Length: 82
Image (spheres, rainbow, N blue to C red):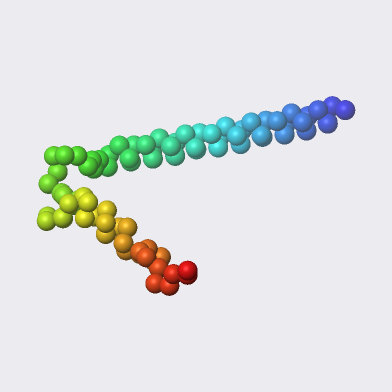
């Protein structure tokens, strides 16, 4: 009976140790990942940038019409059943 209790105690000790080590490794991994993201330059899309998303000479209406009339299955069907 004493030997069986000793085995359970050892199993508990090993389980707690393994879980603690895994928890510490996960925390370290998350910390270094956070620090790496913090050191990266942040790119923001704002009004201060000189990039234009609408080409010169086109309006938003032109872009909407192009998106509706291009692509597979768009436009009027060629064969219409009566």
